Each structure stands twice: as structure tokens, then as C-alpha cells.
Figure 1 (cartoon, rainbow, N blue to C red):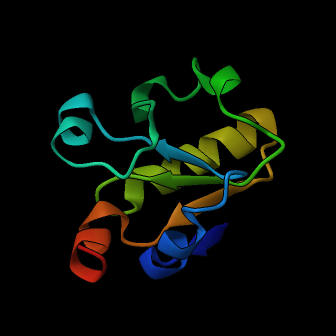
Figure 2 (cartoon, rainbow, N blue to C red):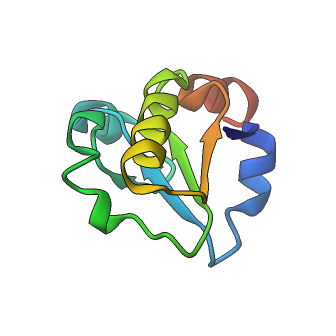
Length: 98
């Protein structure tokens, strides 16, 4: 599984060819997010068709665990090869960036 640090991801946010995927719950997304599409972990399989396969997809949650689970599920079920986990999730983002 590929990982990226908050600082590395922040530097990539200007790139129009990336896709951010937030796998947290709606209330977590509403309270703080970095602009990613919200697909909660429990819906990740049923919503997989909404996730691009031809561009880097940076997946995040609060601490980086749910995003790893989401990536594993998508890779196993659909063969995704373009998914990158945000190390430490939004918790680390707030500590390092905000």
C-alpha cells in the first residue's frame, strides 16, 4: 500500500489531476475536510464506480486506519492500483498543516 504524508499531499493539492477521497462519516466531514469527495467506509464498495481509476486517488479518514481498510477493500474487490493512503489522516493534517 502506498502512503503519503500530510506535507507531501498539501504540495499536490494544486495538481488538477488528483482526486481526494474522504472515507469518514458525514459529521466528521462537515466539521473539517480538505475538499475530498465523501464516501463513508461503509459505502465504499457500493460507491466504487464513483472513484476514478485513471488518476491518483488520495484516501483519508481521521487517523489513517479506515482509509487503509477502504484501500484494501477496493484493491481486493476491484483491483484498484491508484490509491494512496494519507498517513495519520486528518489528525496528522491538523497537527502538521493547520
